Image (cartoon, rainbow, N blue to C red; front, side, top):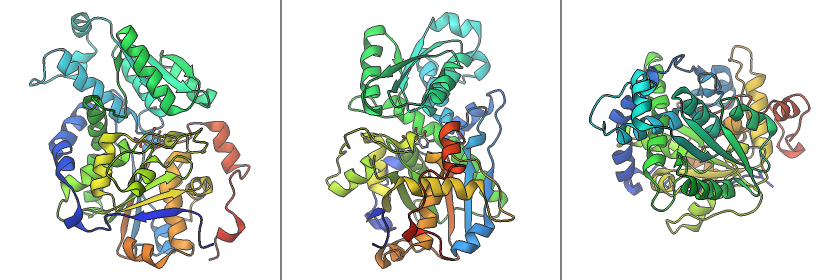
Length: 414
Ligand SMILES: Cc1ncc(COP(=O)(O)O)c(C=O)c1O
């Protein structure tokens, strides 16, 4: 066997085949600027680092590898808060009838604002990271938060949500069951759902969440400019429901419509709902059922977000589904870097794009795929480390105990 990941070459970098309309509509740079302006007012906000790994890039035969390190986002260990907080901001603007006016963070946390809107309860399902970000944002604004998790969610992730005062409900089943239960209970109790995934008739808040993520990408573009780089040539993005990947693909498509980077979407093979939907090739979302048993907890989603899928289907170039050891390998590479490269703490879902790149460049990659990817010494590869050590017990099992080892036939030969 050549390798044990699967791939689909979809748009293959061919701009004429792409459908950019939705990306351009939802992700103009002005929205990213608005989100950034809001995020900048959050106490403790600072840009997360964009790390270059020149020695690994040289080893793999590419021109550069750049990793936005969201493990360092506020105190939250993940990028997710960028979406949830911006969605709450936009939601409050609407509730206050201030859509065309300036709404400052200071006003949002004021007693006057609180008295105007009354007691609000925000609600969402999560695999951990979105719930933590939402609970943190709700607490900051003095509102309540109800978070739904599935039964396999680790205690560490639950505790990290409860720390910010949210009530956590554990639902039998997987992430998608938690999404459905959260929506049902919210309707019954008059809570406001702030979900990162969309469904029929529920797209406004998921759009704001995805737009909120682009504030992080605007930071990247500023950081790239400081390095004399106009744009990455390749973007590797991991997908759960696809909202992050959709935002990354949407942002870069809208910014560089003539020559966007080549987009590679990476998912766990045990929860590859975007991949399966692309494979079906009918433009529709298809679900993956079962317990979605992958170490990449943040990506363990069986239902794609239809909104995100539309952007990914229209603009994604290569879609991959990969086994867990590829994420574990990415984590180990980042936590034990080549001399001169930075040390990056990365959780399972954060490290999988790097694991995928490493596998593509070191294993016996299919010639068709190599040709489609066109990765060479001129390539500047960008990815987001979307989480740090969000589950310390699992993290140690992988890094210290060697859980999910690379199978003998795929081990590094050079
Ligand atoms: C660490 C991490 N990375 C990536 C993702 C993927 O995001 P999405 O579900 O928007 O595809 C998530 C989602 O929760 C996550 O927690």
